Length: 191
Image (cartoon, rainbow, N blue to C red; front, top):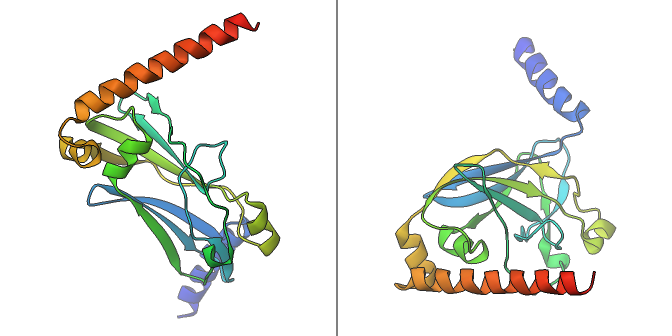
């Protein structure tokens, strides 16, 4: 009994020395991605439960890095109006508690529009740099999850864009190329 208590204490004392209070996990649940934050400390912590996806330069809590099997990264490219966090978004995460959010593959292909049917790997990074949250003492350390494999199927594309998903995707790629060419032309013009 004493031996078990000592082992338990040593395991968690090493965690606490390292300064870890929250662990992030990325899970594949029925081929949908689920991000979980787990309080591994002995203290209650304030957490922003919104867990909004975004790019690294945006006001968001979760950055999702997606790579194909060759290591090519797929950028987040949705432009959405994000509301600021409020009191209702801040929750207490008690020791051992878990908070999470599921992201459906059919939703991800809309905000990562270069994705197509195939196999991918993803990693989530939690960052909470919101001024309101900081003023309330919300946990603000950066956390990085494990890499996780998932698959995008034709049915995910149909659920996201309809039966003509290939045409929708092709139109997006054409518009993307036009915007890139226009930006390049403007860069050269104003050098």
